[in-house]
Image (cartoon, rainbow, N blue to C red; front, side, top):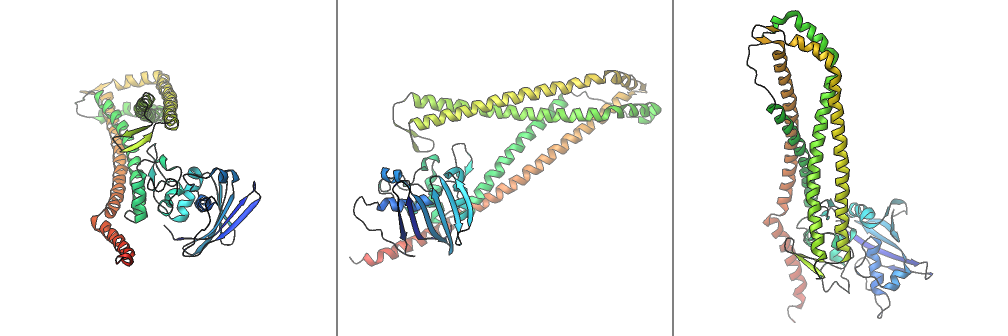
Length: 437
């Protein structure tokens, strides 16, 4: 992350028709005042300007709903950030607008992460890697007087949306796992996700190949194409009239069957997820405890309306996806039926061609000759597709391995020991002045 230094804080409340400006010393600023004079609210406003709302905000301060403007520098470069409600605006030192954002997780989170060079990414409840809210950028730098002394790194609101996030945040802020680690982690997970998609496609092509092989009849004969002479030329001329349409239909059927296989696999995954969500909801509904301990992740979860509602929402999303998938499957099967029906239009021409195919020269029919060649072409096409998929999967494996190696380098004991030793030296230096007392 970059070095952030506060310069000035401006507060303005339309409701109270009042405003205030506070200047900050480059090194240390002390806010003095009696009880209930708004010291903590003023400090919380600094973080709020960056999208990091405190765990608890005084009702009167929330009611005043002040506009917040902060002058600050990042690595010596001046900026200004303005927050009005849930809207944010960043300006450069010349007050020129750089960007606007609305909302925290869906709006300002990614922009603040880019501004601060904060590359930590966390898994949300859907299992996707996302940029966490700005609160995670400031976790070590603020202790809320209401909860910060009771629960470590819990001083900001909205931290419960990620499970087991504190360890990742601690490793990031201490430098044990810096930006490069989390960039590599995102690269690894992206490569693995893309690889799984390709593997689904490969399984679909492989299943289609096995079905073709199972229906194939073994042909054993000596090929003598010259024996058919003019008949072969006549057949080729007739086939050329059908080739374009047949190839288009065959290609369409291969694509449709592949899409159908993917949809069926996605439906299977969604059905499993829905069953798990329904089971979780029934479990929470039938117990009376206010908190539920998860033995898998070691985290306590609130058994409240919000969590139950979240499970219902996730289950509804699964049901909605399954409904759409069933509709997609029905459309695909209808298209497959339509494409197959088009072959019926070739019956007259195919009958004439069949008579040519059944003509025999010696021990072999022309049909046998062409069937063998067509099977060879199909085998080559399938082998080419499988080879292409294997090549892409291999490239993604290499990407994932390279990213994993980068991650492993930061989990190396020597690397972590060097950083921990620096912290130990720093702490001992701080304690030295008090050692004689």
